[in-house]
Length: 346
Ligand SMILES: Cc1cc2nc3c(=O)[nH]c(=O)nc-3n(C[C@H](O)[C@H](O)[C@H](O)COP(=O)(O)O)c2cc1C
Image (cartoon, rainbow, N blue to C red; front, side, top):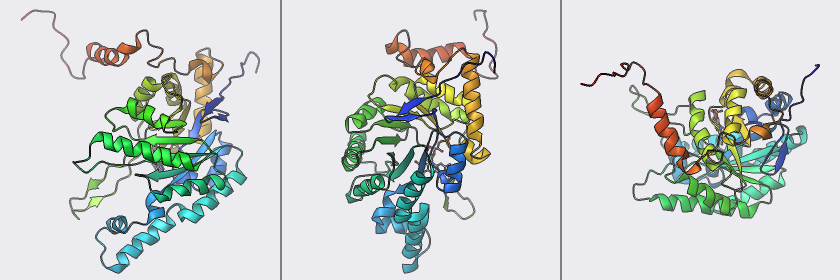
């Protein structure tokens, strides 16, 4: 097209050169070769395979019992074990999936491990590398239910886990975290020191519901809304430029403009799952078109030009960034249904 400017979407993530910042995050959609092909055709710059759980490798009896729920007797444990072994094709099947995905795709394939703490199971990370994964994403999924467990101990556990997985592999390591840490910045820098090449912010915890009829805890899987992007935006905006690590935004990225926001905050890649589950893998092509259109309309020729321009680092006074944004929000936005401010003195 006459006058059209080529837009450079390339980005680097975990040391990998990617054609664009749009990455398909872990979900059942990245667990089948057919869908992986469709994601690549629609423009995915990389894919993260669904996670293999630490429990699938350790088969801890108490976890099996808890998974079995109200089922009782010796069959209950066997039932849970069977489900766990088949989930995401089990540990052998997972290595096969990595090998097949690598053979079938030209884009980087990132394997995912979901874990709570270290142990001999971490040697499995080496098998993942041997199976051909370009990188490993370690999803630390831990809810601190023990009241006696101090935050520092939890953070030490996370650091040890990252260090141990790092020791097993030569390929890049990303760490996917939940937002529920009291000192996110400090933890982030500890994890980078322990060997994380990138951070994925954030994981979503699945909050179970309670069924008032059966009186049971009911597993719930609700998909995200774009409003949830604000928490990743906030932390990526704060961390950008402060760590020797890549940053991936995850949660609430449904459109190309959501990806733009993540880049402006300082993300290297924008990961998406819900939008692809809702609209199918081809939605990635729409997101890429929206990203190109935004860049073009705002006079930019590359994603590199905009990265981090709305981050803390780019603020006139970085030290005041967080408090100032907070206070500005409160003093400039009227809550819905509020009375117009009176100018009369009482
Ligand atoms: C059905 C489903 C399965 C998921 N499975 C995994 C998984 O195996 N490992 C993982 O790290 N994240 C998993 N996730 C989380 C997503 O990768 C992503 O981080 C989260 O959904 C937030 O992104 P979104 O707002 O684009 O959905 C899953 C999400 C959904 C909805």
